[in-house]
Length: 398
Image (cartoon, rainbow, N blue to C red; front, side, top):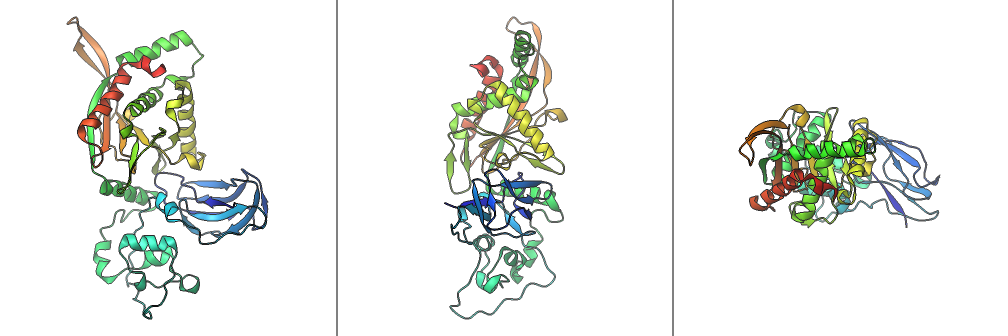
């Protein structure tokens, strides 16, 4: 059966990519893992590899063409197989979670005259965008083959009654990746009821736990194994295992609880933000999590992260501790229903059980959750569970 070649999602803010160069022509043999085509976003370039051995059956997106993330750009299969050029399922389009806004023009595109009952041809993506915008396809002129309405036709179309409202769209006045980030963040806030809880965790024992393991293992454990980020990822994953209702997603119509726990880690890159994913964290040791954390964050920064690790997280962590920030309100990486913000640790003097003054180290935590599907009390319980594992660090290696 023919396999689809899809436009990959190379970052949190990417909604579509450009086909740069096809290395193969239709009919050329390809090997599994062989680079077939080069694609790019605003900041990144990437080679799409063949998923199987076979031949390049069809190219559905030419060089220079822009395609929505997870949209089909070609097909690979066995010699003689046939494919349809119109295989762009709605479920593929919806995965891209796109926000497309009409581009203002000085003169709106005129309304075409159609014969009553005339059949209207439009691509699936054009139909989806038109439906999202509330546009009637009968009012849009198609510039594709046989008058087919394309994505660009819908984007360029501006009904006269909505011209005034267009000036208020998210991202207006911004360009490139910054504009896409604005649209995604605006979409997140518009599609969810976000509430943030704050509390501190006593990490005195966690720091003592790190020193103890270092003394007992010497150089056998890598530096990343005992990093604060590694220990926090493990603590959060265990809390998600105990409170599975937080390891879930909600897209506005469907709540889905996930069995596997895939941790997203927000990483700042030039002019943007990406969320590389560490998959199946509960099945990994501290050493494996530490190595994976260093690997995916480094690859995300230098642009070599595999495309399948830019998406698929079920919960996200974002750390601003090195910036000196104590508390903040992280925005959900929708459709996930939870994100944990990590602040900068600080020292504090308290009275211990013996009424003696002692110094402790504290770490501020900020949990944002979607109040549409999670109430304050269970969210607080989940945050308390994270704190429990942080304050009882030896449970992280049980």
